[in-house]
Length: 312
Image 1 (cartoon, one colour):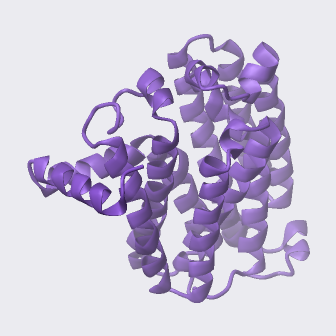
Image 2 (cartoon, helix red, strand yellow):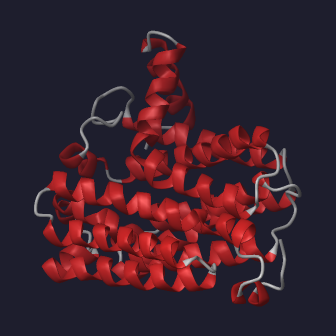
């Protein structure tokens, strides 16, 4: 295995081959491009709605903190088994030869202290969220949860997303050292959503997952797996509508969106159709993450307010 000094020299050579800093920044963006809509947007929407954000100037802080941690995760994930990206996602930096595999692996570990230093600007609690995020990345990628049993994969995914959400919500709120009860309930609900539905992302990647030996829900259960998206989305839509005290029209629209997403998965047959379905899944997810804001504004005196102790 190359020494750290050799890897550092390799990274330096790669950086010298880049035409300019914007080119390098674009390479970093390409590592995270596919997760802008799947992680950055939904997590940011949850943080804004759950904290709630009390100053619009905090929004860039939230987005940058989430993106930096997504970059750390994607550098890890895309360097563990580049064969998958060579099959499914050739536009990513490593298969596109914008950066070498060795340099990307080194860059992954260089980003870790950046994440921790960035988190320390806000609070110790935000640092804990960052540490948890990186630890779960190691469990997912380096310790094999990503290629293990589908249930373990879903649980680790759910916990990983919760670490993003805790850090982002702490930064968005007025006090980066604590979360109120609405924020806690919002994050717990989100964990449940991810654990039970995150495999919605796996349908479009069946070819690559099968090639590297992963046993995802779409591979294990075949066409029946499509119903494991539809039914949980309907259940969560109905449950969240009641819990957050949505009016009938809002609840009906939210549930109709879940039905539409489920129908897209039931009809999908091609990678492109699954990509479209997953896009709409993320629209539903972002909507679900925005519901705590609805509760704070419109449902102060509903039953769920009693459950949450009338905290606003």
